[in-house]
Image 1: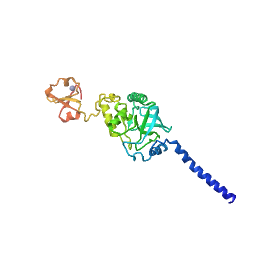
Image 2 (image 1 turned 30 degrees about the vertical axis):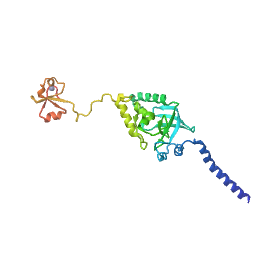
Image 3 (image 1 turned 90 degrees about the vertical axis):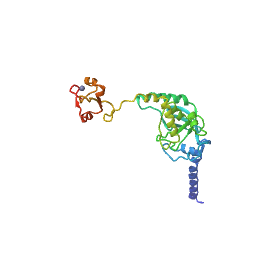
Image 4 (image 1 turned 135 degrees about the vertical axis):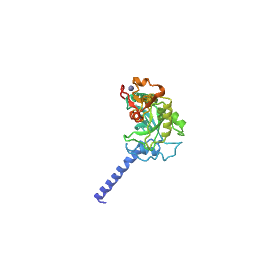
Length: 270
Ligand SMILES: [Zn+2]
């Protein structure tokens, strides 16, 4: 074998080693307990959304979940966790939204953050993923269970899934973002329960509804007519107050009074 040929063979061997090496190292990073399908998703680059192999796996018993520890609570619906393999992830809860945008709601936003901090900090949680496993910010999207889910029944969800808890205590609203809709119907039910019980943020939302602004279809009385004199008035006119109930006619719009043949009062000039 000539010197140049030997050199070529060596280069070739080095090249092959370099190609194989990173694959071998990569395998060591992932905890052996993590289901294969989930592993692949977790290792995806943030923002890369792929059709999930997780949903293809049998549901109910043995639904793949990621065991994790909550290490930091950002706000009511976002936490940082450490997975079993040591990897840190920012997790956004699926299907719920804790308030934060308006002045009134911000108060409940703080309450929601405090609640999540109190309930989840340092806790072991089980992250159930749905079809889309990351959002555009690269955050992991999850249903956060306090116990490993067994049958994913309504009772179980109500008892042990934190996303549902936030809705039930009235500290979050339903926010359905397809394709992650596995528990969407249940979430709507839980929100309804909280709303009917006026829990948390529903207290303010149920405050008196302001009168409709529309003046065309409004049933409000705008003008009062006297069927005897065929005059019509503004409701606060002294003559309007004196109309006998049997002669009193109400009009929603001025043109209705005119059409009915009524003349505007010269005192209140309606
Ligand atoms: Zn009048």
